[in-house]
Amino acid sequence: MEPIFPISALSKSPAEVRAAAETSVVRLTDNGRGKYVFATEEAYELALEMARQEAVVEQRMADVIASGSADVAAGRTYNLEQGRKLAAERRAARAKR
Image 1 (cartoon, one colour):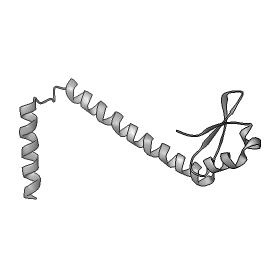
Image 2 (cartoon, one colour):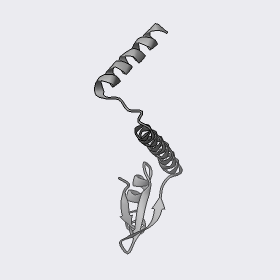
Image 3 (spheres, helix red, strand yellow):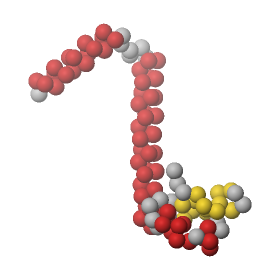
Image 4 (cartoon, helix red, strand yellow):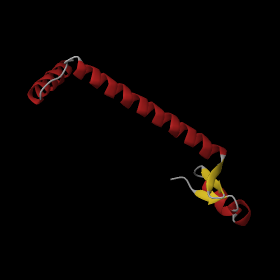
């Protein structure tokens, strides 16, 4: 979780706010509501990269779910025994390569 400070912390305890901003994005509140963010360049870039990676994972998950839903709608399903047999056949085929 990102650290949260009131905006007054910039003047009352700036060292604490700066220290928190070294490793993550700091959220600053004004009258109890989120208003500003504060971070080092490195922490900001890291937060952006993490957000990009999370977006990619979420998109992949959505694609897999959509693909599975399409398979079910088209009747491309297997019972447990059929699935085990198919998996064993695929493993055996890979082992032969």
